[in-house]
Length: 259
Image (tube, rainbow, N blue to C red; front, side):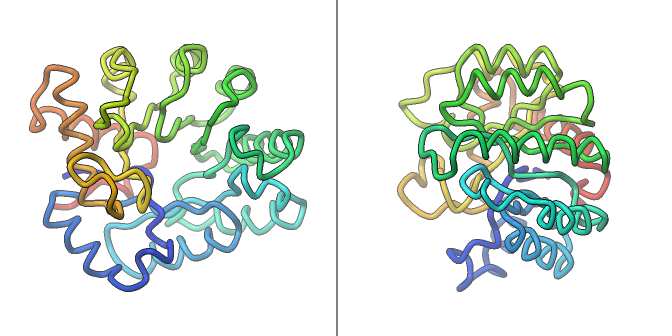
């Protein structure tokens, strides 16, 4: 069964049918969902969801859009959340220079602070990168050997950041974007080592073809896995156990799906 490595299941888009979404995921062969926190409040919500039902884990972190929330107090709250067994990673953190919702120096401060936090608590880091390749690559090369693992989520950045991720042994998590006609990086799908591949939805965003334009949900990660298998000249049946093993390796045994 598949693992959806990155899903905003706590988002309000799922408030009306969250249980049904989970049931559809299970029926589609998705046995575990990593529920993402992107600020302190949503990280608490992700933990509550992970405690509420089987097949869910959580992350805790502050997104670059909310980087101004990074402080000694928020770090303390994240430390408490990351001590819980249901919380399997730091993040979503990183840099986003496309929207610049937070000043770039604050984004870097928040990102480095959360990398240091990951080093301290010995949990992997979920990294968001958009239009910030040079700075993200620099920080990955600086911190990659110090943290347990880096997950480059919904990866679609340029070749320099791909090279930096390869150098530090990062995991590359691919979303529904790889099913779009506009996807322009087939070399990433074939060049990434087999033991560093993950798939995700980033739901409710980035629904894959043939669901593009609708709300994304964990069941649709199967379409992304199928596209990845085709790109690598493999069958879905051969790829799924490898993807699940990778998710278990990076996030821990908790995310291993049960039949």
